[in-house]
Amino acid sequence: MTRLLLTSIGELTTNVVGAGDDPADPTGLIRDAVLLIEDGRVAWAGPGVDAPALVRERTAARRETGDDPSSRRGTVLSREGGSSADADVVDVGGRAVIPGFVDSHTHLVFGGDRADEFEARMAGVAYAAGGIRRTVAATRAATDDELRGRLAGLVAELHAQGTTTFEVKTGYDLTVAGEARLARLAREVTDEVTFLGAHVVPAEYQDDRDAYVDLVCGEMLDAVASRARWIDVFCERGGFTDAEAERILRAGATRGLRPRVHGNQLGPGDGVRIAVALGAASVDHCTYLSDDDIAALALGDTVATLLPGVEFSTRHPYPDARRLIDAGVTVALASDCNPGTSFTTSMPLMIALAVREMGMTVAEAVWAATAGGARALDRTDVGRLAVGCRADIIVLDAPSRTHLAYRPGVPLIESVITGGIPVR
Image (cartoon, rainbow, N blue to C red; front, side):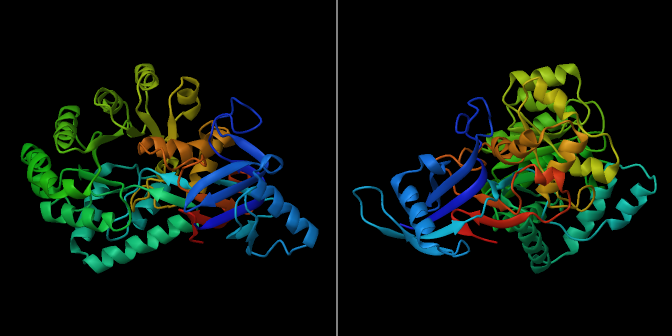
């Protein structure tokens, strides 16, 4: 058995209701905490004073001997009546610890660059969805090795900024073989692969939309389904109509792919209605919502995934997270990392924007970037530090999670652990 023991945690966010001092706190905040990991899973988390015998005895032994707190190796004394075992011991020195970020919406497999579009938007040019076709052309021209190299660099960025679980969409080739290639490359780095053949109608089908929808629902879906878990549709003006979106999502469901929806980003629309009606795990963007949209989300299980990096990059209005949360809607935060409208992998930035621009508290934003993202991916094993969950952990170089919004742009990720193994 491999063990990792984190001690002297100043503030531990578990996302376990009732774990902390406030029984109603959904983030389960524990102060002066200890966390034990065994074989890549959380084995125990709680206040140091209430820790099991192995934790109490190890902590006392370190204090008595005056061990250097920076030492990362030691002997953990066994639980009472058991045998002793070695473990890696990390004294985090009063730092805050939170679950690894769960980024439930990314577009990481692509070629090319669209920095000129960003510069134009900052000069006042309005955003339109047509830029996707530029990335499609660049992606089609890229080799596997070129795409794989870009993907590896972005995954390294995700890990460096605390993201331990992430989704990746196809959607930047829009041919049968090309979408299958993107799904194959995405599956090399994550199990959370989403088929997004319905990203935009490609130029070669602009005069025959029905033929392209037929292709997405038929041969293209057949080519991708074995490597994907999800199916998504860009249900917006410039994208796909509500009727087209429903047809595509239902076709995916017949192949075992669960629905997700890009909706209500560019204006009011039917994205939320379709997502809730079809039991989608999430509807993403949610910038323009009616009272009926919010009521439907509150009554259903579909997560509203907010992507503030897009509003930062397009100068569109930010979603009203406060309105959603007050209505009882489950909210997630994600990066929407893509080359056109949100070229960032930084979940700490999403938290800072959510707090500053969208009416969320720090606790709500951190929950949305961890447990909320897990809900959007229908995962119960990540996003929380509950016993039995995967030990995906961030140690912040700060005494509290508040610093994620209080010190925007500062690299506060001191270390990252994925499945009990340090990756940074």
